[in-house]
Length: 283
Image (spheres, rainbow, N blue to C red):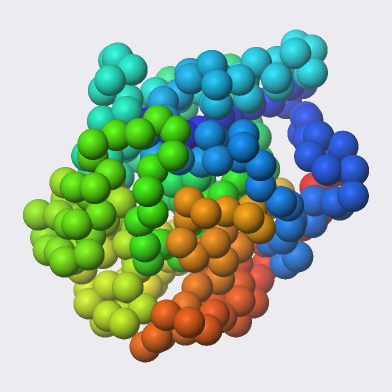
């Protein structure tokens, strides 16, 4: 499962405005992230175990966009040939493989060759950021992250909708073996598991998150590609009980060596070394 919707209008123009989200928010870019309360739909759309076209979550969002923006072309990407495969791949298909497949799908879509705007939901948000950093053709023009875990997670709560037997199994593995090589290769959630008590082990063992956050080898191309975005909008759900910690949705996380106090986006190495030039406004 790859929670991702990519969209543009017929002329390739930006189609999101402040009214699309919250009349009291000005949808600032990454320097001043959006702060929005979560509700029941937020949780439906952000939980692992969903699938691309679920009429109660991602399919509903696609339908809503298509109804409110005449002439828009909406693509909801699916990893696998069936719904079951899409769901299972959200747990067990290596994230780097998922990103590679998505890049190929996007490159093969003639409707996106001039560039597109993209929305990533939950874990799909950081996967989509990896697409922007690794696959600049076709280009993402504006990237919106809804409940993404950009600094990873440290805690796996009970799954909400839909419930899966996989959740307890995954929770047990992550608690004891997240950085084992076979777990990193086979379990999606392990690839963005970030243990603040084991920062060195995280950077060394993480095969996905530490790479796209430039915490291993500094990849200048990642930075250059990310800075090609017109805007990068982060939406955090204040009442989120699914993502732990919710500060990760704004690139915040626990300060190293403990799991109580947080650093902010602006205090992170990722921001000061990579993202400072991507502060552009949504139009």
